[in-house]
Image 1: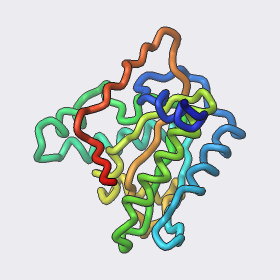
Image 2 (image 1 turned 135 degrees about the vertical axis):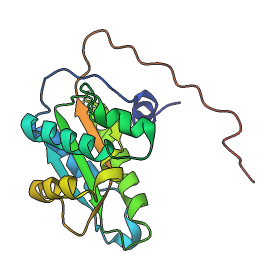
Image 3 (image 1 turned 30 degrees about the vertical axis):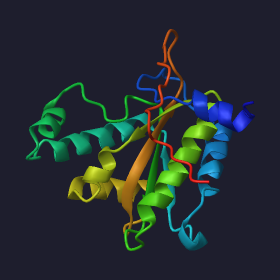
Length: 188
């Protein structure tokens, strides 16, 4: 028998296309509260959550990421940086940047737990989401870092992931998830 939490977990999927409808302040507050209640190493809660909803700032952030990508040695990454149509956050109306002090070895794990809470809280509210990695790759680029600091990401933080948040357009179909065999072992 499924409980409500497990149903929500099983129903969550990554959304990569969004309507222009903005996430409400109340729903964003709920999602960020869920993030802050994630487990953290030694309970230190050294993370920071920066939510950006201003379309021009999101576009500017994407451009700075593309500029960083355009100089990459990796041809696939460089291609994204040079593309006119590339948008790392899929034009979602809200982006939550999850950062942490990199001096703690568990910083990335804390952020991953918080991001999972963000995705599950969003799903419970009928809001789509997707994990966004590009800022983790580019947060030390001077142009990206300057804008991150302006947005409120602490200067001593590394970005470990982001959550794109918004609503699915009509007609979006999500694939059924097939569990990979052999991923669970129980020793009794």
